[in-house]
Length: 130
View 1 (cartoon, rainbow, N blue to C red):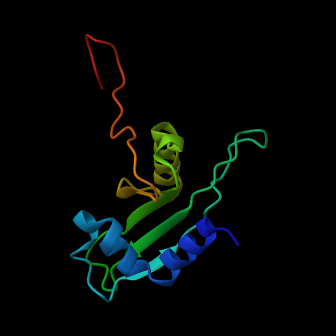
View 2 (view 1 turned 90 degrees about the vertical axis):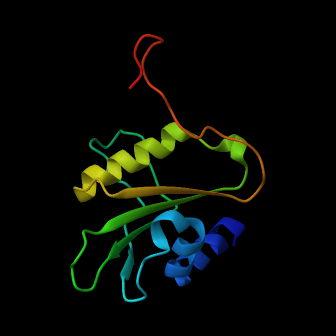
């Protein structure tokens, strides 16, 4: 078993603790009673020949009383930051948002080694960025 699978197992065995650690800005105020459900790792393809995408550990957080809309956390583990693709992460989040009909998605990338990677993406030209 690879360390990647061990890491995913830890995230799934202790999801609330993992969210509070790796997504502290969004998860520190989550009550202990929230329901955390792992969701489909394999993303649906529009056509059979389309590129296959598989998420590391997507989690859906629901409030037991329904007082708040569910939040999806996309936890992606990357051993080496130089292999990280912000474009791939954007695809994951947009596809998941469409599949689950939500805009409440928190992308979280966990690097196991130090290094730098892109923090944001700007699309457009020098005259106009979006």
